[in-house]
Length: 186
Length: 186
DNA sequence: CTTACCATGTAAGGCGTTACATGATTCA
DNA sequence: TGAATCATGTAACGCCTTACATGGTAAG
Image (cartoon, rainbow over all chains, first blue to last red; front, side, top):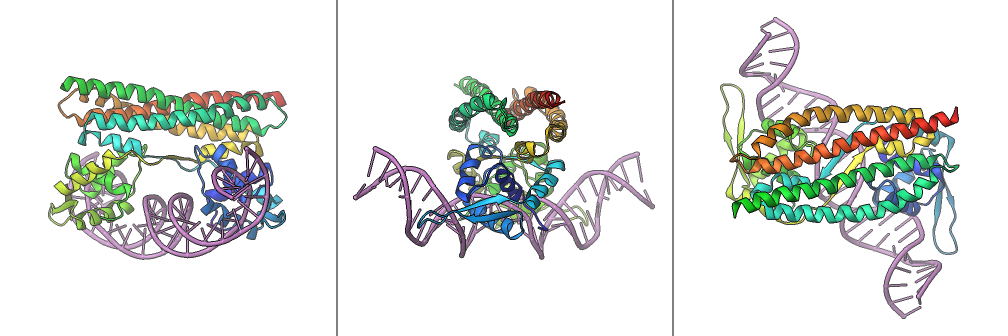
């Protein structure tokens, strides 16, 4: 396991919680990691193969009838490998916001166009918030339960709430300023 | 210009403001776009070549003595091309936060390790905030000036401030909760 | 019986970074 | 004169997505 990717750790971490299939992993990611670490099938299945080949996880056939189904479980080696990575300080925290890039060049088209961009962004943020809030509420109660992992999930969830709420405040203020600038020209 | 990358537009947009060299572009990006759209030399120079080949920008030799120096200017075609892109709704707004990924799996190592991760993150955020605040203040005055582009730069800057301040609030709360959980175990 | 979801996987290619290589110029 | 900064560029490769391909199963 010479060149480990972040992907490896993401999948290893999820499998530490419980054995899962590639399909399950995708669903879990979409409900939990998606905000700060999205992954597609195109990287999940190949990663599962290499992790298996390296003895980090073990595959077991749990097919029902005609449908292929493979569940993966972390090995001790895999868990130790993950833990070692968790100890070292995090590398990059990056964003890639097309909306902001377009806004930065907003002067090329004027305020109406930028306001439209912000409105689209705002709508998406609201939709994400609606998905996140019930999860956050559920974790608020669960985080006091026996499973100590819930506290960590709760914290990442709170990060999302803080982020999205900040986004919405910014959207409101930005639209206001753009409209003012727009009206001054009339 | 069949398959345009986002990179193309980022560079085209910067050159709309004023003619620049590849080196200048890098510096500008590090001061303005870096938060939501980082770029390295490894993509700047090749992109400048293809944009030139496609007639989106024009290169002019402004070498002084022995040092090669090439300034690029947007053409009408290039500006129109950028404007067309600015009109269509933004695609993806993504994050890739290694810190959050590690925190999500924090239960594998326990609260002390997660607190350390958060502290490193917090330190970086504070450093970024210190860089951003003077820029924001400068743009506050400039945004009322003749150059209407400043308003848009100001807005993206405000986005950064809102984001970082939210990060700091979250850091404080997350550390508190982790310490509480930690003390309960003693 | 058909729609939605379950389930696995691959091929091609997009999109970018890191590290290297090279040298001029400015400033203390 | 040495360090920092200016300035350009390439090669190798990392890392992931999109789109495709295929079919089983459950529920209405």
